[in-house]
Length: 316
Ligand SMILES: Nc1ncnc2c1ncn2[C@@H]1O[C@H](COP(=O)(O)OP(=O)(O)OP(=O)(O)O)[C@@H](O)[C@H]1O
Ligand SMILES: [Mg+2]
Image (cartoon, rainbow, N blue to C red; front, side):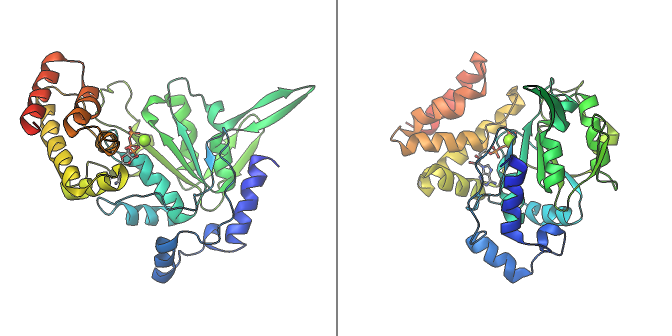
């Protein structure tokens, strides 16, 4: 069975005809509460991930702690077919959020990491020579359009303009994808949603999105959570106690102040989770902070020295 048939079978088993997945209204609060409590109960086993970036929603809820009204906004966008851009620093939860929303909305998820070699054909598809025949192979974007999946293009600003432009007809009222090579014009299946993300903090003078691209998206601005919430995430993801998590977050808050002294990127929630995971394995808090929280941040010896001084003053 090919990937599309496999996922279509999953979709049929999961939703049956004429359910939310086919564009009908979202379940009421009770349905949502049941969903949030137990996840998609009775979910058939998800097909294994392939190399096309396509995944059925996981049966288990991916842990995600909201930091503003992003889950509500995303749901409204989804039900209106609006494309969404997630902006925010590295390691602040953008990818986890998309995984969580795919689970919550019960949509398959197609993820593509963008880079400057990514071509329109990489996204749309190409003819492949197999033995003595030529076969069309859908790219990840086409698969998502056919499936009604959430298509997540990570680090979109890394892609070239001529690649990004293929998204335009999918992210306005047309919701279509033109495949020049096969002559097809595909209408996006119900449930299809385009999501892009990038980190506006990097130096990207030459790599900004064009206004005609930007203005096709609803923008959700991500940042690090409040200390209270961030500590909750560190406890959950790192498996350490609350007091240790509070201490790590307090240190990270001070380290984030080093951005005023030339630190390019603030220490992320991801680094805090990694630090906590080392502590959970028995590494002392100071040593764990040295290798997992401070050292990855920079190669600048004077900055590193100042941050390690702070570490020495915080933990004996
Ligand atoms: N709000 C959150 N809820 C749950 N976990 C979170 C949250 N924010 C961050 N995390 C934790 O931080 C880790 C990094 O998050 P994630 O990979 O989603 O970052 P990102 O914003 O996609 O980063 P990048 O831009 O580098 O891809 C996650 O694996 C998770 O452990
Ligand atoms: Mg990410």
